[in-house]
Length: 260
Image (cartoon, rainbow, N blue to C red; front, side, top):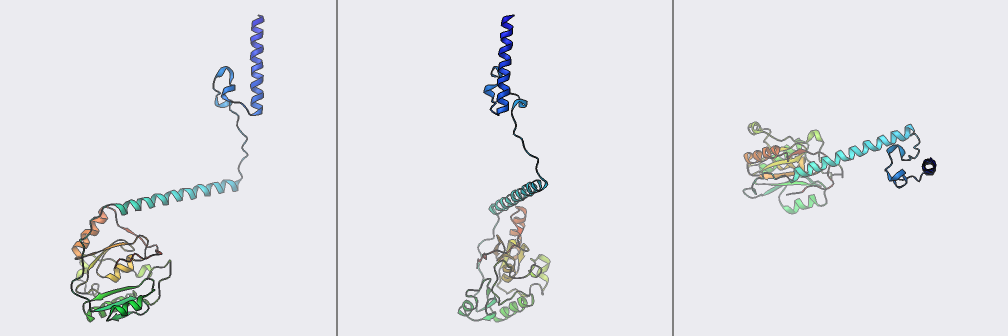
């Protein structure tokens, strides 16, 4: 009987010690009775005051911003992966014949010019310049007339954060039926190349350099290529669509993707 009272006294003493430790916040698994791990209900918890409505709103905004950031990061990585995907590219091509006259579409001075020295003087330090060489005066004058009519010429250096032309004025890419449309093909010279726009405002195939330039040169990640024929350009574009390496981009770029 005496031994039982001693055991009970020891137990009570241990319980008193645990209660004191709980009140002092110093309880740990090492102080649990008989070396056992404490249950969740035994762990002390600091008092957390209720959040105000403004605090909850701020926390909600923080989580929303974090979610948007992660979404944007995912989109960026997806786009990066698409750009790295192998793509069928047209073989290296060059224009046939020689250029005897030039057209400056966007520069300090615009129009037809006879020498490259004149061209260089008209585009020096001009942000967003566009020019092209032509095999005949007739081709050059026609190309300039068509571009002017379409609002694609300018003597104003391109401001940072702005596209060369308004979105609704950017030329559309063409399809096979357009080849028979004389008005649609009017600005094309006899020795013009074809241009494949992969990451542009209006992805697709363009019959002239000025149309490709307005679509791709001053947008973020702008990507385009030259091709010798409409058929080659179309095949390359269809392949790009199939491999998801073409997309719309109309955010102004700080640096043009000059690839002349």
